[in-house]
Image 1 (cartoon, helix red, strand yellow):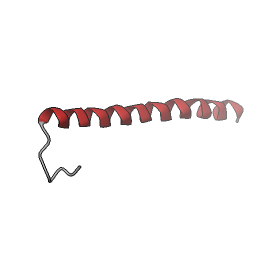
Image 2: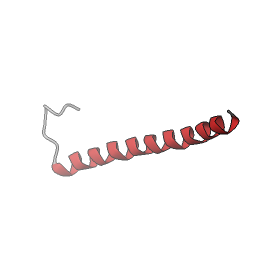
Image 3: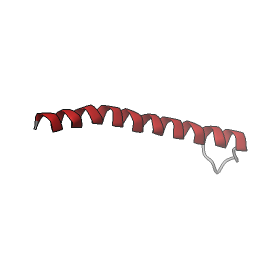
Length: 46
């Protein structure tokens, strides 16, 4: 779906932005939760 073909209604645009933010924040939390134990282990072992 191209944005140039038709304009999205404000509600659909806000929903798509909300979806993008939700997925990206989930990815950041998953990365932090996966990264923190590894770094803690490396610091404790060294």
